[in-house]
Length: 114
View 1: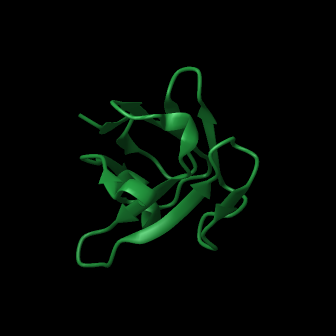
View 2 (view 1 turned 180 degrees about the vertical axis):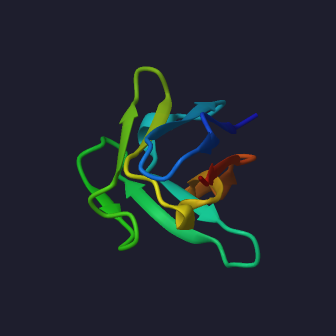
View 3 (view 1 turned 90 degrees about the vertical axis):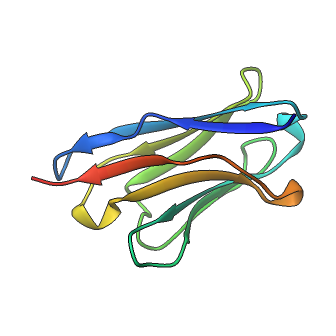
């Protein structure tokens, strides 16, 4: 069974950093581009970042450019999202997604509040 499991969320203060992880299993992780999405209460799901299968090309949403960095370790079948200088508007549930096989994780909550 193909799975994506996010972890690393939590409650932080504005300006803090947090690193999310997404562990993959049950499919050939190294063959797929992966995305991070987020969804805040009452808002539509937003694409945060995209990385190709080998980790060379990365694209970011305008709201996180310069603050978030996405990476992957194909040997560990794990995806990462390093989030720096967090803002209250970054508060959301963060999901990883393998778009070509329509696979989603269960999400991890990130709350940025003073």
